[in-house]
Amino acid sequence: MKRKSMGLNAALNGIRSVLNILFPIITFPYVSRILQVKGIGIYNFSNSVVSYFLLIAALGVSNYAVREGARIRDNKKEISQFSSEVFTINIFSTLFSYILLFICLFAFTRLHNYIPCIAIFSLQIFFTTIGTEWIYQIYEDYTYITVRSILFQLISLVLLFVFVRHANDYLNYAAITVFSSVGANFLNFIHARKYCHIQLKWNFNWRVKLKPILILFGVNIASMIYVNSDITLLGLMKNDYIVGIYSVSSKVYQIVKTLIAAILVVTVPRLAMLFGKKRIKEYKEILSRLTNILVLLALPASVGLFMLAKEVILIISGDKFLPASNSLRILCFAYIFSILGWILTECVLIPAKREKFVLRSTTISAILNIVLNLLLIPSLNENAAAISTILAECCIFIVNYHYAKDLVKDVFLSRKLLKTFITSIIGCLGIIIICIICNIIFSSIIMKTIFSICFSVILYFLILALFRNEFVIEIIKSFREKIKINK
Image (tube, rainbow, N blue to C red; front, side):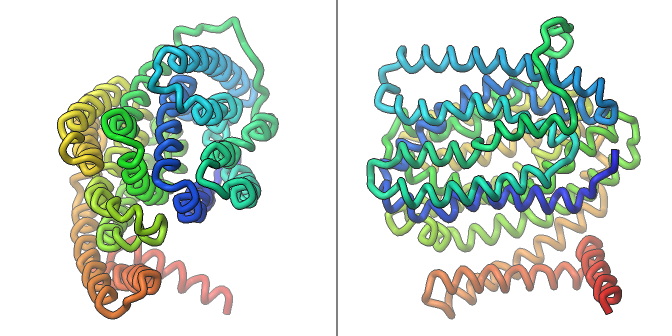
């Protein structure tokens, strides 16, 4: 199979990630003003409830399929058999998830008022399963899903402005969100025939596949708990207004995190393939490069967002959501721990088949997150959820590193990464200075934000170039070579 460029894949996945988050960025200022804080609270609480059942349906299928499928992707017969078996397991987990959801809806009276919105969001469960997106990750095919995303996002944007026009239209917004995110998944299933033929299989060794899948499912459960428990507990312990406030800061945090991690996601199949084939030297070269690049992105993103938190909240949601700027500033401290922890999970421990250690670290982090939320939410409200997120992300990074240090010690403790940290921190000081100057010069929020971002990017890039950061120097050399070729 022809090897696809990781640079191109990263660019395509970045476009796809941007599209997936551009939809809420473009629509959220409009939606938050139409639905108001209460409507946004109902929308996000319903979504957080369904996310648990979506996780049950998914099990650990995606991570397992990418890890194992990457090794056999060149053998169509073998990958077809493998994919059919994994898909069959996924169908059963989906049915089980729906049964549990229906039981919970009728058993817990607290959820009765949210049933219509939860029912709409639950459509994601079925469509995510038949989407078999893990196949496209195995084959590093981001062209098809990127084009598909553009089409469905554009359709969804039109639907939003047509059908969400009043405060009680949050159900319409939920339906459009589902259509936007998983509407094309039926097409995914048909298009996947390009790579393999999927059908339901009954006669295979379920135990061999279920054991690692269930361990990865445990990992995903724990991860989901420390990601979503803050909104869920805020909804149960406080009210829809507090949920609405925190939902804004949490959404902005996740948007930036998704953008930074776009490079990581496309690298996972390649790293899994290299590790599985014992090509450790190539594996470590890519891992080192990935880690350094993500540090160069995560640190300035966290500093810039911290400096512009108030402006970002005002632009996205309006002055009614301004209290969210405090929790957003707190969340900015979580980026570096989150990204490094994610690298250790997806790029090291899971390819190395050490998923039981990932389960251990995420369980510890999830328990810590819940305990901190229970203790702090009564007095600190949404800020408590932000603080607990930081500590949970930090915890998972520390524990993951403990279990992966024999594989990554030479990467994480290298002079190259240390230099990257130092030059990036110096560059971040430049970002702080630019934001302070722009705050003094500009009175317009939009102008202040635009010029702060533009000048910060330029100054950060120049500082890295001044300190001869090898990745920036590579970009400059590549740019010069392209100019020479064009001439």
